[in-house]
Image (tube, rainbow, N blue to C red; front, top):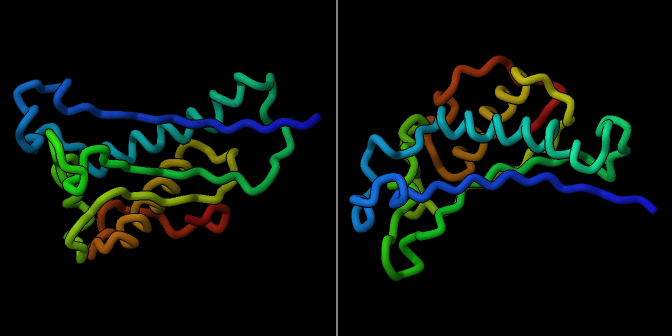
Length: 162
């Protein structure tokens, strides 16, 4: 009998828990998550899901045959967008400081997402570069005009694609 495993890291930020005084107001600029901070979270989550969590199901994850191409998905989900109604409505740009990506051509920015198919045995520096490249691609997909200027990236690697 063959099995499979799915590793998932879910990071949730409740701004009202950080600062109760912002419960019914926009998140102050000093609390908004920046693009570099988001890249750090995605990089740490990537390393956790590919190197640590698989140890829960096998002693040596490198001996387990993959059932397909490894795929990692990076998401930013706003659980209180302006389309939901109710209390504490916030736009995604009120939660994240996305100014490093430039301006967006979109009038509404909801969830951000990108899937990355790549080998799981990347070194930490390769993971960081791949995450940043994926974030640039994600930002471009969501209409940001200067996403490619958000990070200084080395030339595109042939071992990973976003």
